[in-house]
Image (spheres, helix red, strand yellow):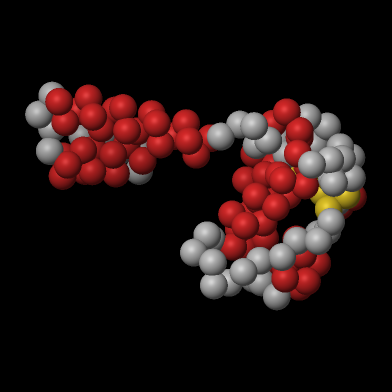
Length: 126
């Protein structure tokens, strides 16, 4: 499997990597147990900062698309194909849209919503 990125694309580079790996899993070009290049190797191949590739791998691992086996490497997760259908970004957006709509209906201003959201994200209780 060949991964490529377009630095002129408005889609973030780490998202491009994630989408290509997921697409390869869905199309059975990557199968469970198949090894992936190391973070350093893929970063070198794509001429990217290793932190960009590490971020993509971290999110793929969180979603159980890949699994890290320490020094042995990174591999396609056994349940990767079924996990590719999970759209966490969509779930987050939908949940936040509903919450914001409800708060606005209750009379909260956007500024109040932003302040409380920041407080909650930073574990500050008001």
